[in-house]
Image (tube, rainbow, N blue to C red; front, top):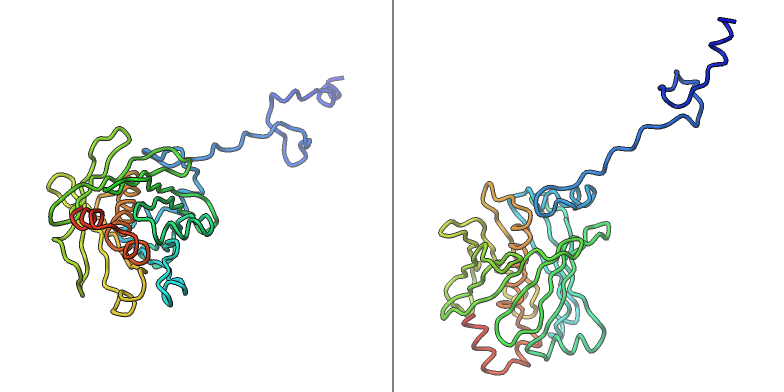
Length: 274
């Protein structure tokens, strides 16, 4: 009987499977938990975090606006679309202004108080961040949302007599960083440089690059870059600095079509001084 007792023994699932011949319904170990990012974006899925790692870790971002044929030929301003690349010149995500048919196009070209939403998608179509530019009378505001549409902060343009000035705000309205542009100039053959400061310390620089006479004269297709200082790796602040770069472009350089045709003098003055 002793020899047969082992054969009659039942496995109730309390023991590990005995070798490759273990029954298929034996209990399996639980799958590992899905990892997330860290910090304010801690609930970001690992896949999305992996695809955007160069945005959070790189020292340089390049923003290149796509040129539409209608814009180049007849000056009709199209919805903005930027390719955002890292140090290796590979696209991390695209930032595309959402268009809503003919009325939206007319509003963009003739409405001086145009509002829009810009969605940023990775190459596989995942939403990375959303920038909302609401209606304002004078000073632009950009409200920033994360991949899950949770508010991350905002960028608020401020009045300044001679240069661009904006505050980067947290979700409670507290000032996290400040953006200081160059002295007022109507035209330049050199780059425009905007310093992002924490107190007196410069933590990043936003540059609008001179694109050549033809491109500058006949389109609003801009080339910008963001340079981060070493150690500036806070994911929330990096997203807000990117939003500040988009705000700089929309406020100071997106001037064909609706800006040249639809601005009244008062609004133009505030744009130049703000």
